[in-house]
Image (cartoon, helix red, strand yellow):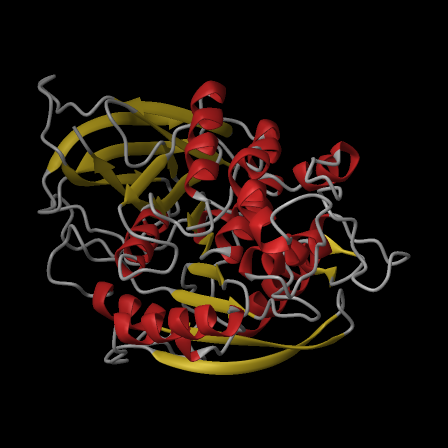
Length: 442
């Protein structure tokens, strides 16, 4: 049963999009992980024009794969086709800037994968991402070293783990996206576990075993990450249900420590861009975990984007979902090539060392533009449309050192509301110029 489901999902991925690689290059790499104590693989997408000899720092997306997969799994070739189709897209509303994508390996026995969590059974996979993967990538490839140029994305297990990691480390990522991931763990009790019981005999006392079915297998995978017990053979986990099918509170409390719905409580609203999506007919009962997460974010005052469709967990809609997730996180990156000021045609701007960032983005009706200065200097902050025409000027004059925040309310110099669309926020200091893409959605 498990094999048939996995093979079906694999074929669905392969058929969903045929990779062209018309622009980018895909590289398979190997490095030593200090956290795991072994060599691990990663697959790297390098955009057209990438030259290792040129120190051009590209923004980077770390993409975490799903269960029963690995970094070079051919099921994920469609990721690079998506990037090829978006980089240099003729429609500015669809286009993204050139970027690097890192796909690390999160596979590990004895079950379906690491869940990208620190575990006595699997190893410290969260630490592996934070320290080893990012550290190796930044020392090997020409990618941004700052939060403003770093995002994390993922599918299924990867969306689940990526969101959890980002909520625990919001200082590292400007944006996070989850596709078909379990984000709020509370619905495990009411939605997921009740559907697990028919695989385990149908009536109490239940006999739990990872071989009972796909939900059992995935539950043991999660238990290996969230409630491992190396003193409890043969499965080496504390199972979250007892033989009567009732929740074991002390075990599930350990699970909840990894829930994005819990970890987000330590995140300042607007500190990181948040995107997530899920099909309403997800076969793994993850849709309520997404709607629950949306409710938590709303209650805490976090801006976010949540999209849903009528598809399943790994349905054909997945290509669209991941396309939207990549476009979302890219909006939080600074542009690599700044826009020249039409009033100063001879100026050759440099990349900014001070980071210009915005939250929320996309936004309606206002967004906060933030930056920091290392010393007092003359600064201008203005908004332009995609033709290079200045829409409004938010700041002009000597500005003190430190953190600064300015609000743009989606209006022009004359106070009139501007229409929905893509705009460019441009920060000019005495040394550098930084440009950031903004998406106004009315």
